[in-house]
Image (cartoon, rainbow, N blue to C red; front, side, top):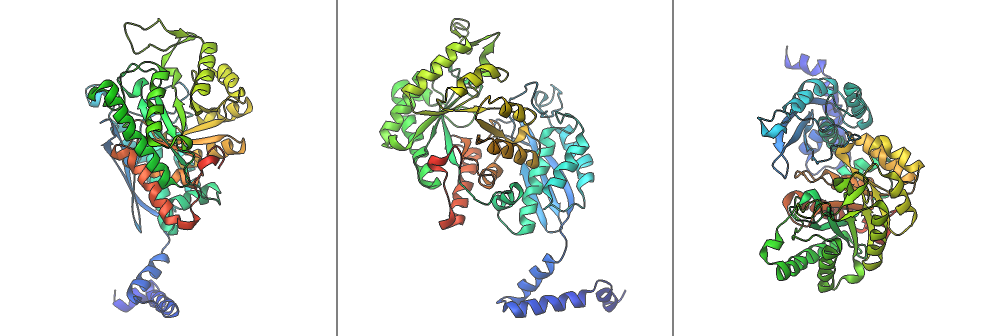
Length: 470
């Protein structure tokens, strides 16, 4: 084929002429670059290749990373993992071979992506997130995503979302806002985990997380300053009281002194806050994760102390009394999972007291029921418990329509992927919990929020005191 035949067959002469005319009209300072970009825009974007690999999360446990290629670039996503394995959870698929990574290997998930999901999505437009996610869901056909694995589905869904933003030439958070129908972009208040217990640390503390929420800050940058300074003051307080061993850290970088009572941990945080001088700007929040120590019909607050376990059982009514008193004694504005995940009766009773926000770790298929029964008044959004971005967006819409708060959440097994930062801004969640202001995989999310605030400039809005319903 001659050069002229090639030009004629692909209508290149006309396309080049159109690009040159556009460069002239725009008075482009670099006409070659302008013409190149102009012609690139004229090519429909489509997914050309998807490849997955096994990487490791922040705990050294295998997880999934995906490279999604279009004819305009490569877009990478890595998914977090968590310990939740309840009967209502979607399936985080693993091989189960105890002789390899203690059963945590994800080679089966990699195969599902490389062979099944990839084949279904090749040729699709990455800007069509809903159609992409529906194609993935249709491939699985199970209610709990047990065939492909929610970890396989989410990795591809996030990568496609990043590709869609690039094709539209907008920031990722703006693309998410478009997908979710949000017109107002709001930066969330960070809920910094300062003390870890429960399954996230080796201490005797039953409660999983004690957090601070700097709702009195006026910008995200100020909130970061408040959070980091308080964290380092807390380290000093703990060092003075318990020595260097008390400054060990949990899964998410928060401090893990060997304490056992709720009030002891809250007192340590309160002292650190007092030292910062930010008392008027900081509130507290708890993630109790009470399911972890629910035994029979009672809660064992000493479940991590073998010599004491069984001596400090509390009924659900006792727990309500305890939370009520803690909220009187400390500036607590939010409590997550105060009861067993299936104890909707007492969760509802506590919510109806109106003492604080009650965050439910409610899965997608049970959100509507929780809303109808007024079981709690805030949604904890762990994106890997949904499987696709579209399902996460639907969950947030249901929650906000019911006037619930929304808390964007990391997982204990995190990666350096900062996607949830953009997701929080694009969906205007009032709070993001990404762990302590310490450790790279946690700081990656906070640093991305700083970049977004800088990019928005004068248009940046920080949730601050409107954290419940921004």
